[in-house]
Image (cartoon, rainbow, N blue to C red; front, side, top):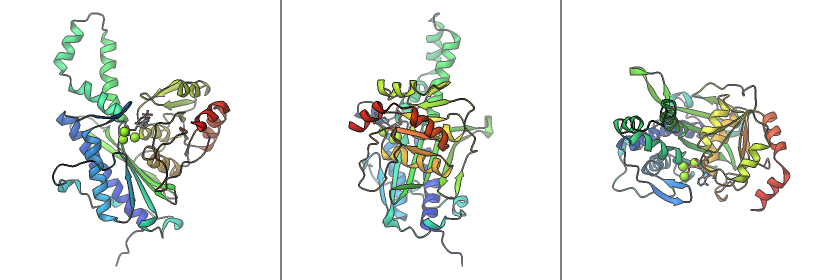
Length: 346
Ligand SMILES: Nc1ncnc2c1ncn2[C@@H]1O[C@H](COP(=O)(O)O)[C@@H](O)[C@H]1OP(=O)(O)O
Ligand SMILES: [Mg+2]
Ligand SMILES: [Mg+2]
Ligand SMILES: [Mg+2]
C-alpha cells in the first residue's frame, strides 16, 4: 500500500492546484468586467477577484487541513450564498506529490504550520489593466485618429503597457514552519504561452526548501546590475535607495510575486523596496521559492522576517531580495546606514 506523502509535500501539492483555480477566478472576474472595487486605504484596493480567489483558496485548504493556521490578506471576505462547488479543490498536483520531502520537514504537524495567502498580488496593476481592456477598441481607435498629436508609437506602447500590467498579477500561497517560509507557490494567471489556438494562459511556479523549484526555467542573473522595484508605491526614500545602487537599469513593475519571478528568470539582479507597504502574505511565498533556488529575501537591514501566527502583518523595514548571496550583500552594503536607521525607527 502506498504511504501518504508528508504533510508539507501534500500541502504544497494542494496549494499548486488551488492557486491555479484561483487564477481562473481572477481571469473570470476580469472577463465579466465588473471588478467591484473597494478602497481599503491610500493606494490600497480590493476587488471581487481578491475576495473570491481568497475564499476559494482558504476554503479548499481549510477543508483538508483543519488544524493549520491560514492568514489571508482579505480577512474573512463575505460570500453571498453557498461557495460554488468547483471552487473547492481537493486534488493535489501529481508532480509535486512525487517530491522527496527533506528530512527536517518530514515530521511537521498541522499545528506547526502557518499559511500566508495573497489571493491577488498586484491589485493596482489588475485594476489599471482593466481600464484598457474595458475600453471599446473602436472608441480607442477613434480617439487616436482625432488626436493628431498622439503618435502611433505612443498609442501602441500605451496598449502594450496596459495589457502588460496584467502579467504582474500573481496568486501567492506561502507555507511557513517555525516562523520560516519552507514552501511556496507563485501562480501567474495572465502568463501567455504560445499563440493562436494553442495559446495557454497561466503558469504555476513552486519551491520547496531542500527539494528545489519547478514550473519555470531558473536562469542566472543578468550580466549588468538591473534593479526591480515598485511602480505604484514609490516615495522619496524608495528612490534614494535606488539611486545608490549604481544600476544599469531600473524596472518598475507591480507585485512582490512578479518581482521575485524577474529575479528567478534572470531579468533582474536585485529587488529593492526601502519602504513599509508589503505585508507577510506578499513575501512568504516569494521568499520560500527564492530560498529554494538559493536566493534570499530580507528587509533592507538584512534581517529575515518571521512568519509565526502572532507576527505583525506589515513588513515595516522594506524588502531586499536577490537570487544569490553576492548580489544580496552588494545591495545591502550600498544602502546608507541613515536610511536603514530611519526605516527601523518608524
Ligand atoms: N502602500 C501599500 N499599501 C498596500 N499594499 C501595498 C503597499 N505597498 C505594497 N503593497 C503590496 O505589496 C505588493 C508589492 O508592492 P509594489 O507592487 O508596490 O512593489 C503590492 O502589489 C501590494 O500587494 P496587493 O496588490 O496584494 O495589495
Ligand atoms: Mg492588497
Ligand atoms: Mg500583495
Ligand atoms: Mg493582494
